[in-house]
Length: 253
Ligand code: NDP
Ligand code: 8X3
Image (cartoon, rainbow, N blue to C red; front, side, top):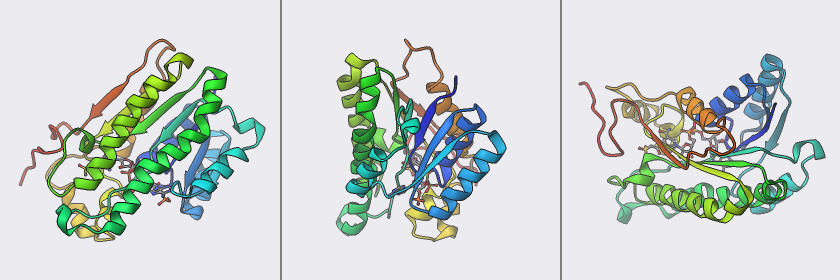
């Protein structure tokens, strides 16, 4: 039976790969992101290739009123969301805390923590009312281990981990599953965003080992949401085979 799957940050990387994976399985999709043109192109592509229904929400998850309005205004046929994938997120900068840019901190906290909360607050009551739903929060190995200069980004992902635990407890009486998925190094636009368009520096992050692809992560997320109703993966870490944790990546020179 097809589901309605809502993916935040579907215009790139892991979110886009999830949209493709769920569409391939015949699920209908609500896709969100700030880049309207990419969103429309993806919607068209998924509809044409997989024959699924796609609803595109052009929004910035940091904008609370816009998130509330967008989900309140969902047409009736889109309201019964089965799976929410809180994926929209980013890192900005990689400096010691005492040299960090507070504007970057605001964007990371507002997107990775507050945006995730706003979207969950908009969709969870419907899941609870229906006694059916699954929230997948994208954390990171950065949630598990703080690495040098990672400070605020690591803190936001630690918060995602804590909020996943909190949701699991609060939603427990209603049968809502909550899964935190923590990827290690995945080659996406993540490092280009972190290094503010410095593609050379971004590429170096993934040199000397085989990183995960967005499709690898999407496959794992899809698996987590395809288990029998009584089975829930609560917390899952996946890394490239060459990566032990946030600190150790075995690179060939
Ligand atoms: P990308 O930069 O490729 O994709 C990030 C997505 O988030 C884009 O679709 C972007 O869309 C969206 N996004 C960012 N800010 C906002 C916002 N304010 N409102 C709405 N959408 C937003 O990176 P990844 O795919 O790698 O990142 C996805 C998630 O995975 C993030 O939460 C990241 O922290 C996490 N992660 C990534 C890892 C990696 O190594 N790549 C490892 C572990 C976790 P748009 O710009 O159009 O708004
Ligand atoms: C993204 C992975 O190691 O760059 O969360 O923080 S890392």
